[in-house]
Length: 202
Image 1 (spheres, rainbow, N blue to C red):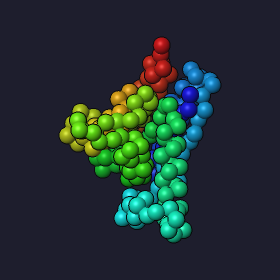
Image 2 (image 1 turned 90 degrees about the vertical axis):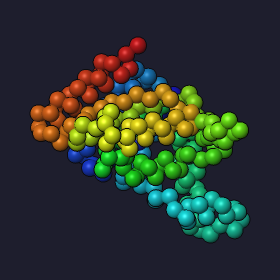
Image 3 (image 1 turned 120 degrees about the vertical axis):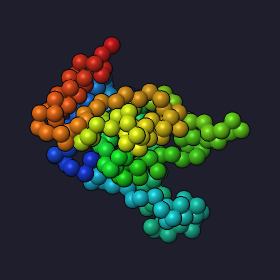
Image 4 (image 1 turned 30 degrees about the vertical axis):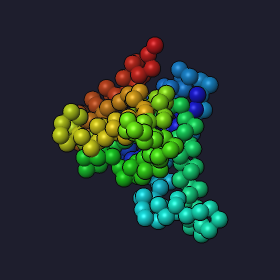
């Protein structure tokens, strides 16, 4: 199995989501020792925001692309292929201002590609990536799951993956991290216990 591990937190070693995604990956490897892991840090190895230049590069014939367009297309194709080659994804998705980090959104902009990961038919859009499993580490300073303020976070992630045919999602949650030392410690401990005892239980 090929596992793609993505972190998107901008907090480096101080990040709760980074700590938990690494624990998820280690627990997965304990259960699936023959798996291959590819790691990408979307904060330090950030994709540019999707732009008019991105569209122009994709729409320009190969033989007349300039150097910048060639680089843009090559990077986007590598990102897409990395996703397509994966069987399992572990994604760190902290909440920033009621939604996912822009670095993670930029990644989605490179994998939601008509004709590659979804297509349109007379019946509407059809996802082409069914069969993949996604584990999302969801962290936030407040308590937003199930609330209107959480729609742009976990609900957005569900919608994005469902659009390309992926419905096998599991969430590892550590919320309320900004409520004080004890609530933070309790939230992290609960997430770690879930990872160790339940996430990959047979």
